[in-house]
Image (cartoon, rainbow, N blue to C red; front, top):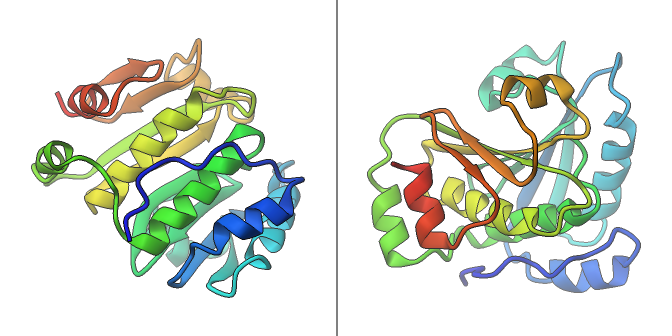
Length: 216
């Protein structure tokens, strides 16, 4: 069954509600966490978060790799920051979280898990036809903060685009944790979407407009 809508905002404290939502995970989903032992203040809390999440569904598993030592896995999933979370369903979904998904972005993590389980983007036929034209690697970075309610809408669309086409990677980047990326991509407000084809989108947009702006 397609997962068509983003999950209503869920808090980490409301674990019973999270358990009810994760009852919709009907096929195996693996959460891969990349950490490092030095200079990673959020790695421990990210590990604790995933430890708790996977307890809420028999179809969820969690594995951890070291960003420095597990070179093959780092190369396979193309991550270069820690903590980073990769969501894998039947295959790699292309969905990444760079930083611990806190605040509003916790619901985006749950949404990504449900998408991976369903294997269905829920995007419109028109959007799917446009995305089918992507034949080269495309990296969508969505910069967010934990306190930004509009960010979830953008993240939801970008996650669905990654699920729809294996050439697309979507990274949800916590702008409060990675100032180097904020400077590099000139982030002055969130949500801001930066694509490796040069497209930049500030704010939330309807699906049709967002897809067309990402793929000019």
